Amino acid sequence: MPGKPRLTYFNGRGRMEPVRWLLAAAGVEFEENFLETKEQYEKLMKDGSLMFQQVPLVEIDGMKMVQSRAIANYIAGKYNLYGKDLKERALIDMYVEGITDLMQMILVFPFSPPDAKEKNLDSIKERATNRYFPVFEKVLKEHGQDFLVGNKFSWADVQLIEAILAVEEKIPAVLSGFPQLQAFKIRMSDMPTIKKFLQPGSPRKPPPDECYIETVLKILKI
Amino acid sequence: MAGKPKLYYFDGRGKMESVRWLLAAAGVEFEEEFLETREQYEKLLQDGSLLFQQVPMVEIDGMKMVQTRAILSYIAGKYNLYGKDLKERALIDMYVGGTDDLMGFLLVFPFLSAEDKEKQRAFVVQKATSRYFPAYEKVLKDHGHDFLVGNNFSWADVHLLEAILMIEEKKSDVLSGFPQLQAFKARISSIPTIKKFLEPGSQRKPISDDKYVETVRRVLRMYYDMKAN
Image (cartoon, one colour):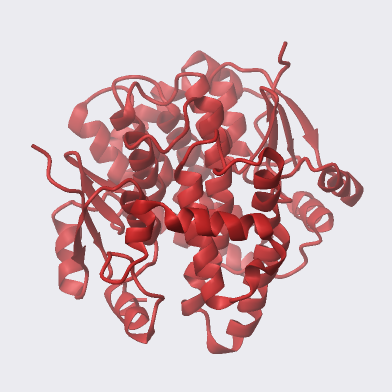
């Protein structure tokens, strides 16, 4: 009988955090294996666990899955968070990909040189408020439904709430021009599985700190 | 009745090339509108055609789709190139993720200085031969089938062939250590729809040149310098 999914990654957000969010939103318990040393990473590479020598790695349903997009796609499909047909899936994919582009900026931010940080923060703010948030504000306003796609909770909603919270950590008033997103944020945060994930003691990881950055750079030999 | 899909992009490979490959592999005819002026781009922005203000954009089945991965997933799903179940889709997604990362290193290539081009060429060839090609070589060797997933032609095969040909353009003997991939390349290239796409006169685009770079910079007002990896 398959056990719980097992996540292998650094003890921090990075590219694994959207997977944690999605599993949590789906109410799926999971285990984590934190990479702390180069030796652990080299062992994983030697035993053929990492198809492209990279983490994230998620062991799920007998597969050793890599590539965070593939992992999230599989979880979304398995737990009915991927819409009811090809067209809904297309919308969810478009929304998730757009949000992922914004999250990518946040992902690389801690690794940027000190003199670039202010500029990068401005870029994140600019993109969030001029490119990405307006899209979802409009989607919600136009159909007036609680969820982004098909009047049903989906991966797109999970990805958006994750992004809103991540941007707010950097730019606290970022939702001030977006009443629909403010209401969306409250609604999503109140959903039982998400509410649980947002409580202390959940597998949700804190924002990256110096220790996290050091660990990643050391293990990946950057 | 729905017409042919219509692709909006520059007249060159960039992020749209994988879409052209997949439509062609599926035997689907498509139209193209090439962005040549800033005005064209601004018109698309103003009429709300570009969800995130970016191309690629593909009009298909009444949707204006953006985000390359979303577009490709939709086409793969629609034309039965996405496996028969969730697990096959997972494998296809993993494999496509790898070839996407590999081809991603080449997107910046036309925009680099001559010196950086050399650096990037070496970088991409190294990644191809030490990380990506060995992974696909092993998949094919282990199951001995003609196709990467489920013994059936899929998006993963199309994407891998595209990647192989692009890397070969940078180093013609790059497949020399990979007999499975050599055979794979020959097999997939001779599939009728792909064979047709590989012939002159198809909608396949050539390697991007300075004219392409100039057009992209002008249309997107993207004048900053790009660096090698």
